[in-house]
Length: 301
Image (cartoon, rainbow, N blue to C red; front, side, top):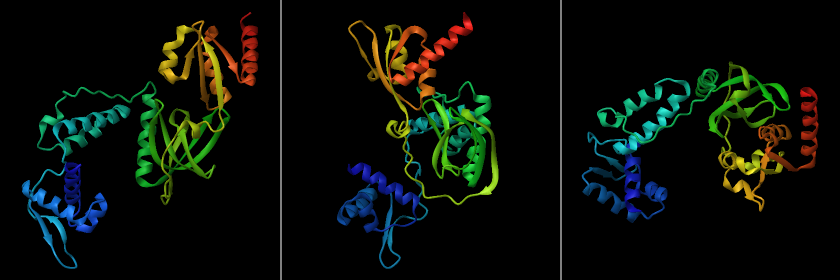
């Protein structure tokens, strides 16, 4: 749309002192003639654009002209504020609220608490998570290595990594970066990290691959589970895996299929349903649950 292109051109002119028409034409995939018409339209809107010829020529906004560099409405800014407040909820600070106050200087209406969106990213583990998040944030900003002990189903190990990204996904916090032990990019759950430290060693940032975590990638070496649930737990299957994760059978029971990272995590989850679920496959997991049931029975007889 033309209006989107005009706003895009204006945003570039606000960020860069001078640009050329060929640059804008390539950026927006239009002809130079179209860019010239767009510049005329911006001038007619009251924003003085200056074009200069020659080797150092280009397009720029007239010196001394003041314009709102955010290009955001009050509604837009309140949406941004809601997101920033959600980050404050993680560690209980007002750092991002203060950032918003800087962004909205001169427009007090933005900070009015009339937003209809409330996002709280804090958790029951807030007291232990907040220091980890603060330390990892500092390490990312300073390009410093981090070290920690990691607890996983296969055991515990000491890891050192180059941290690049804090991730909130699947209702939990993770750190994503380059693991020296695995010589590859890995993601670690913060709740499983202990003895976290910011190391003295500074690393040179790598060329990063696209951060993308999908089920197919995550569960590459995982286990596919098929199970029959009693109707009482339909709400939980919908909440945790979605309505497409099961099919309602003639007797009302729910035939569930999904992937799990490993056998241990699948068993742990299934056991939370007590006798309201029957595992159909895989057979090795059925046998493991039968062994666990016998051990439990032996303890409580």
